[in-house]
Length: 214
Image (cartoon, rainbow, N blue to C red; front, side, top):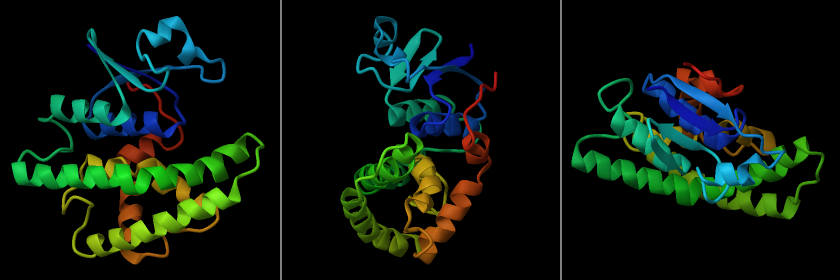
């Protein structure tokens, strides 16, 4: 049974899920949700995702939403193939969950808001809230100073093996240089990590838009 992803080919949440599927070498079908047409708010779509958001994964009658939950499901269902995205060892898994929590609390809120203001709003011809951007970048820079210290001692954010905790960073690591101040390049260990992160075949496969592989 081929997995079905409901999402948008150019949005970060769908890219994360697709990158995880590429890492695990799992074929999938992408069903594009018409966000401009508010398809995500229709009764039919709300049956799949009651909050009217993307993405959603369907697997032979099983349905799951929320990007990070989907990625964890993929990683564990296909644990025996492709990249090991979640460590099996209990202590290593604990460090992975720690790194994943750091991404969600110390990267995502700041990187996403800066990118929305400077990149996505510009695409729609809207002005950025420059005060908000500056506030987000100042907080993100402080957090990336800590990242730089961590990454001075190890290759990836959860240790010396690539995990979902790294993969979750992919979309905004690619977009942050476009906000006007490259907070990544200014930190050598973060810069090295981001370069290796974005060079992975999984990101290269989705960076210009997610496409079905089945």
